[in-house]
Image 1 (cartoon, rainbow, N blue to C red):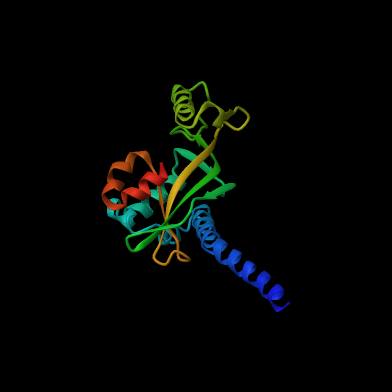
Image 2 (cartoon, rainbow, N blue to C red):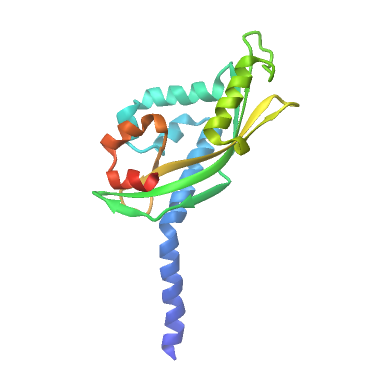
Length: 195
């Protein structure tokens, strides 16, 4: 009879431990994205894995994030990820890695040097819209004529890194333009899983 009371406790403990690392990973990922929305760039880089700074110095990264979010040439509106999936967490070398896939909405509107909003009849906007559709898929990009925003449904993969596999997750956003450099600083098995 006493085993009937112990069994549910073991099951609940096992389930909560199994969900723990992924829940912590998701929490840290959302916190990093919230810091970006809040334009707390020093906090954003705290959530970036050290491997990122092997490619881009931390100070340059902070400047780039500031410029991206505060450019006088465009207005960028980001949202928190709406869908997040996390692959299994595995150890490679002395680090634990997980692959996270997130989906979020991104809006961008461009302005001319005189401050007026650039519209779809501007060749630059038409070309930009076509490039976004080619990169993200026709179904994931639309143009709002009433606001002149290009609205994109973005799916993005990141690699999560933790020393203990449970807490203190840091992230590397996968970017095709830096994939070659990533091969030099990340385990091949992790990059293969992230494809």
